[in-house]
Image 1: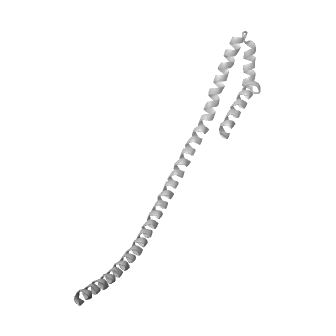
Image 2: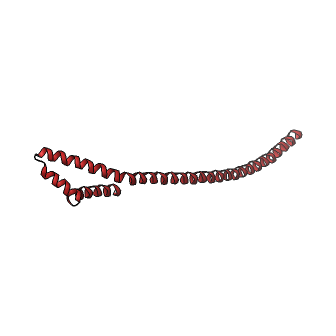
Image 3: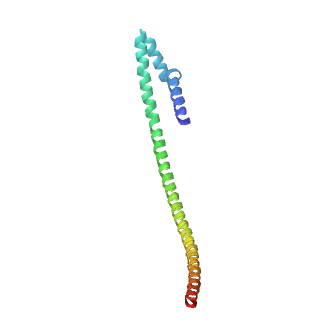
Length: 137
């Protein structure tokens, strides 16, 4: 925004200088004095303003294009860098999740094994007691 404002101020200053302070300004003022009617003066001023605007635009267009291209390159580089960082972070999260899942599976397996062992012991006791009871009758 600041660059556009500077561009506008520069353009206004250039137009003011061209009309009043420079050699070209003297030529324009002398031509205006030669014009008889207001319409001729207005037409001449509009022609000169168009010529100055065209000249000004040609002067400014190159730096603006360079600015746009450099900004585009900077954005592409930044996007590429951010993409690599995001991909690296995703890989890190994936490996961390795998480690966490493996750890949880180990813990669950151990608990399940201990539960199975305990259940086997309980079942053996129950079976033995049932067998003893059935033999005793």
